[in-house]
Length: 268
Length: 349
Image 1 (cartoon, helix red, strand yellow):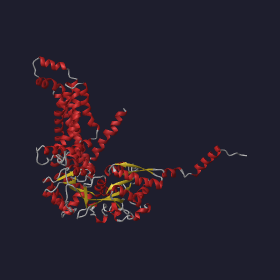
Image 2 (cartoon, chains in turn brown, orange):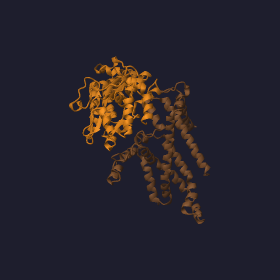
Image 3 (cartoon, rainbow over the protein chains, first blue to last red):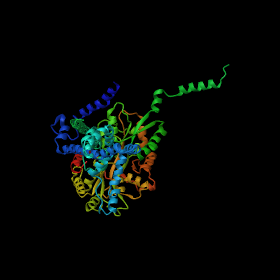
Image 4 (cartoon, one colour):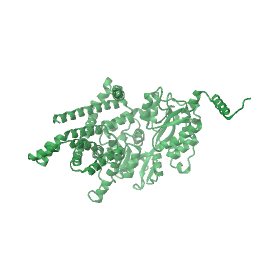
C-alpha cells in the first residue's frame, strides 16, 4: 500500500499535472486551435514531425548498433571466457557506468575533435590530408550513445545466454547442423528474450537522452528531449514542453508495446 | 544569612540571562536561516565565502546556498508562492523581468537597502525595479592566441574571416540561455539589423554553417574545450570567464571587446515574494563595496557599486559598463520563442 501511494503521488499525479499543463496556452499560440493548440503545433507542422521521426530513428539506430556490438561480447563472455576473464569483462562493462555521463561524453569530444587523437593519428599515418569533421555529427552522437548504453545490452543478453541448456545446441550439432546453423536456429532464438530486454532498455534510454546530443551533436540532429530542454531553459514555454513530453511518453509506450509484440510473435 | 555559593550564582546568572534575552520570536527572526541562490563552480565559492560571510558577520543570520540555475529556482518558487523555498534569487535579466511580471519577486525597497544609493539608477531601471543588477559580464571576442596571431577586432570582421576560411568560430547554441541577447541580437545589431529584423544574424549563421565555419556550444565551459581541442580558434564569449581561465594558467586565451562593443549581460538579484525580511540584509551585502570588490577579484566580472576601485591587475580586464552595448532586454524577451523556433528550423537545435 505505501509503495502504491508513493507511485501515485510521485509518478501518476505528475503525469496528470503535465497533461493539464499541455492544454494551457503556449508562448507561440496557434490561432483558433483552442485547448489543443500545442498539439496542433506539434503534429500539424512537418518540422516537428521530422523531429519526432529523428527521435525514433536515432533510438532505433543506437539499439541496432548496440545489439550488433553487444551480442558478440555477451556470447564470448558466456561461452569462451574463463572465470577470471568473465569477471574482468563484467568489471570493464560496469566501470564506465560509475563515472559521469558528462565526463565520458567530454572524452569523446577530445577524441573526435579536429585536433583530437583520431584525426591526429590518421594525419600522422598520411591516411588523410585534412582533419575529418567527426565531432558535431550524427556519427558522434551514435558513437557516444552506444558507448554509454551498450553495457545494458551485453548484460541483458549474457544473463539469458547463461540460462540456455547447452544440450540443445549439442543435439543440433549431433543431428548435423553446422556451427552457424546451430547459432541461427537454436542459440539466437533462445536468447531473443535477452536481446529484447536489452533493446527495450537501450531504446528507452536513447529516446530520452539529451546530454550526449547536446555535447556531441552540434545541432545536426534534433530530438524531442533536446527541444524540451530548450523550452525549459531558453523560452520557458512550459505548456509546449509538456506537450512534447506527453508525445515522447506515448511514443516510448508504443515502441515498447511493438517490441514486446515482436518478441512474443517469435514464440519466446 | 544566605550564603551565596557557586551553584546559586550560576542559577541566578542563568535566570537573569533568560529574562535579559529578547522575546522568543525576535530571537527566532535573528537566527532565521535564509536560502540564497548561486551558480556552481567559482560562483558558489564567491557567494559562500564573500556575500554569505558578510551577511553572517553583520547580522548573525545564516544563509544556505542553493546551487542551480534561474529556470529551476523560478519553478521552485512558483510551486509554493505562499511559503517559497528560496529567499533571494540570482537571475538573468530576461527571466528577472518575467519573475517580476508573474509576481514571484518584490519591488526593490530603497529604504531597506542602504547600499543602493551607490548603484547607478540604470541597474535598477533595466529590471523595472524588480531587483537590482549587482554584477555584469560583457560578451566579446575570445580567441586562441597561439593559433590566431591577428584576430579580427569586430564582429563583422570575425564573420567575414570565418566565411573566407581563415578560422572556425565557436558560438553559443540555442540551448544556451543567453544566446538570444549575446548572439542573435548582437549579430543582427552588428550586421545592419535590429531587434525587429534579425534576418542579418540568421543569414550570417546559415552562411557560416554552409561553409562549415562554425560550431556551437551548449554550456559555458564547452567553449573553452572547443578552443583547447582545436575545434575552433575564435568565438563569442564572456570577458570574466575568459580572464578567469587565463588566470588558471591558460595563457593561450585572449579577449577583445569588439569594435561594436561587448554585449552587456547583467546579473540581477531579487527578493522573492513572501520571503524572510532578512533577505534585504543579504541583498545589502551583495551591493556593499567591499564584498563586491572581493567578488570581482574572484570571478573577474564587473560589479555595480560606484565606490568599488579595482586593483591595477583587474582594471584592464573589466569592461566598463558604459562601454558595453545594452540589448533591448524587454523586447528580446517577447521575441525569444519565435527566435528559438526559427533557429531550430534554420540552424538546428
